Image (tube, rainbow, N blue to C red; front, side, top):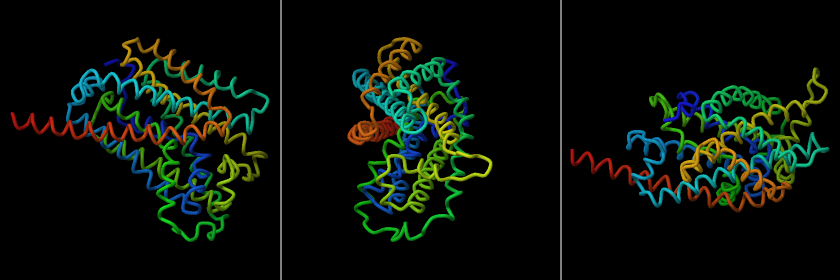
Length: 360
């Protein structure tokens, strides 16, 4: 195994939460309130089952196969031909996610702080920085994810400022229609995407003890943050306005008044932008790793190829309504594929383990 791709159990926690927490911070509330109105935050909680399912099943599959690397594990379960197809699909999954994150960042920056720059220019600048961050492998990404994690803690503090300023009637009744809550769940898929990286990186963890707990902790942290942000947004401005805004959480930030800071929004954008950059870097590692495994092209060359592909795809996702429309249509298929792959691999790995133990 490449030493540049080995990480610790704690770094696994930082990478998984970093891969998930991104654009959803400022957009998630808008999507869920369109479907579930004031109960949108409940849909966010329920959707948190998906990332937990991903990390749990991934861990159990590798545990049954003695933590061999992804390609070996997949070939033991699906054979070489299907593994090749699945690996390309995994690579496309992460290329699409990276493109959606990078274009989302560019769309937001041109909407708020850098209106003088074209989003297309921002996409290529960001993609170049992501390449530089990812070209040396997972170890560097993991270290930076740990540093950026503390910026995420700062984001946690912002909703606390508004918790006593909202109107409780904005979230009542808590549940008015169970069906609408279920319908809102698919709108959260993009926010929770990135957790699929666990399928690739669990074998890269040096000490596997506690890996399952670290993965679950990352998922719970992410779900808690997303739920808290969504709940407070609805509490403060109501579901009707929330559903009409592109970036409802950014609206809250713009209303924040701190005596020492005259304008809090640019500071938040700077902190949040660094967080998004790291999220995209995690996506890029996934895209590059799977592309390299599928094509047998060296990692560093694959890193450049996937960077170009993600940047070109990102151009299609400008402006924001294009990105939102395309991701809403594509994500249910990608999530469906991931869940089907995981459940099937889990069942086959268990069957192989039982069969092996029976022979022993």
